[in-house]
Image (cartoon, rainbow, N blue to C red; front, side, top):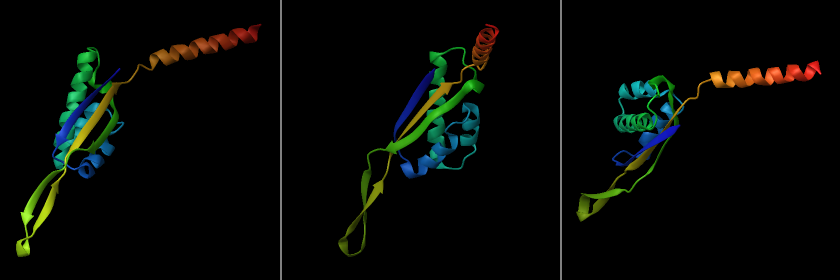
Length: 134
C-alpha cells in the first residue's frame, strides 16, 4: 500500500530541494527522517514535514504498518510560481529579483512480507519434483 503527500508553494528553489530528495529516495522512512533532521539545509525542514505527512497518511490508511517497513518510493520537486520583486539600482533603474518557489511530492509505501514469496518458491519446487517422479 502507498500514500503520498504534497507541499505546494514552498519558498525554496527546486535547485536547492532536489539534492535532498535524491538523498532520501529509496531509503527507509525512519532513516530518511533522521538524516533530514540533522541536515543544515533550509529545504530539509520542508522536506521533513512533507515526509512525516506522507508517513501519517500511510498509517491512517493502514493501521498495522510499522515504522521500519515504510520506504520512500518517489520523491521529487517541481517549479512553482516565481515571486517577482524589484530592487533600485544606479541611474534610476530597477533590477528584478526572482524569488522561486517549488512543489514537493513524496510517495511512501510499505514493503511486503518476504515470507509469502518463500511459500511460492516451496510450491514451485514441489511442483517440479512431482513432475520428475512421473
